[in-house]
Amino acid sequence: MPGIDESLLEAMRLPGARGALVVDWISGLALGAVGEAPGGDTEATAAETAELARLAMESGTLAPAGGGSAGTGREPAVDDLILTTADAYHLLRFVITTFDSTVFLYLWLDRADGNLALARIRLAEMADRLVLG
Image (cartoon, rainbow, N blue to C red; front, top):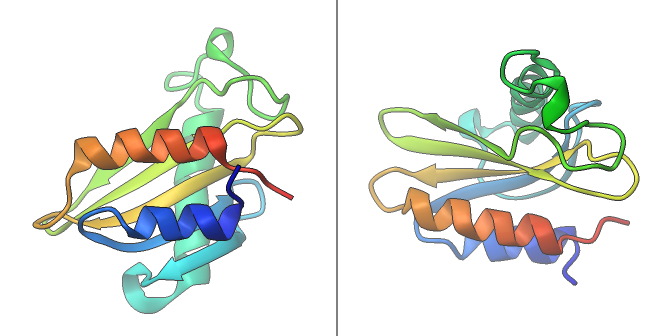
């Protein structure tokens, strides 16, 4: 079972990958980072993507109470978020853990060279195998 560093390196092997992070969406802190960050600031990227994650997970509309429960170790109601820009895809994949499920994988993918479908599949696989600790 890969840890944070191994998972991030695996994410960077995806076609078009520019940067990857493991982020705690409660604190907004990066638990690990590799590659570039949009705007060149890894900590700002972690904090800003954590805001998106928090909004999605705490939304009564996007993450209804019956669809899962963040913070309890059960499967979260939201699997992933995808933000597209003119030149990039930004993917956030929530990681299910036994203790609190407040972590997500973030991938910054070049739109011209990346494959969004493949990246979603691989991030889901990575999230399932990720060992935190």
